[in-house]
Length: 343
Ligand SMILES: Nc1ncnc2c1ncn2[C@@H]1O[C@H](COP(=O)(O)OP(=O)(O)O)[C@@H](O)[C@H]1O
Ligand SMILES: [Mg+2]
Image (tube, rainbow, N blue to C red; front, side, top):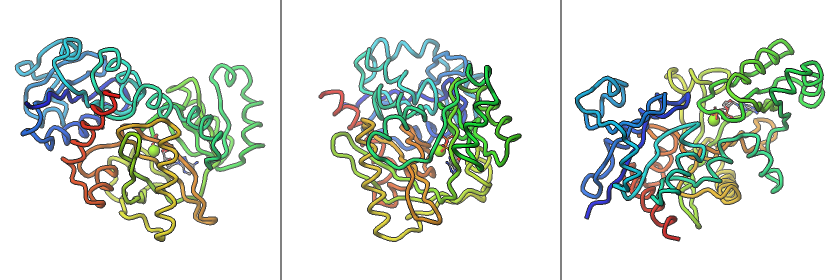
């Protein structure tokens, strides 16, 4: 019998649009001989709607106005346990952060990707640091800025950042994705502006020393015994890999394998698997590193538990380069979700 799979797309985060593109790729490539598919959209306002129309409309956003093919109360499909597995192809908050994972756990439906704890932890850049520094994982030096403290004593915080990190620094909302709210500051004026901007997205902001780095990413897949694909490298078109460089600037390049020697490729793979295990990941995650151009050292940058998942995104492409087809990757995610749920 075919397994019933809900593919969730859209969602309430700043990455709603990106999610629609990832999910469309999944919908177009999932093996229909094996699965019966339920595409369920979540609007930016958090309304769940099953969508039975053309996948093009999911990709371009027209689905929300397509009254004919919309079935309201899409959440009922989960609550009535009509499906065997949920694939949350949602990026960012309310999707990648443990909330959907918690809902599935309550309903006892296997869910693709990492579980509640791991998703929440990896979504939060500050807590990722707090955990990983106990395991000696190298990360960029940092200062955490909380909104209420910043509002009370700007001067003290600015001084602390300047004394500890100097310039340049990166400023990031602790919960962010797709580079939304992230900026690079070269001086005090930019630092203040960057903090104010990042604090619009989160009450906790991470300020990090800027590493003069190449960006190397590792795709990890599995539950208890995860494996890593051949690492890839991002060559951003802009000063850093900002939103524009990620999604609109065709000059940004992906290089697979990453342009580093064989030994470095192997050691970064095992480092990625170690981090994946520490953070209790399951199913899949993309572990992103900054490779210092001068010293050659690797710094962990972040872990994405629902990485960009279009056919041409880094995660699936790294697997493709390692001999795993996109549709087989979807099979693996489903199987891994079921396997973990049974344990
Ligand atoms: N400490 C850092 N040093 C150098 N570049 C950085 C640093 N932190 C972030 N960046 C740049 O900013 C981009 C986005 O930051 P990242 O932490 O990956 O956030 P997001 O979750 O939005 O992808 C990275 O891909 C990289 O280009
Ligand atoms: Mg990133």
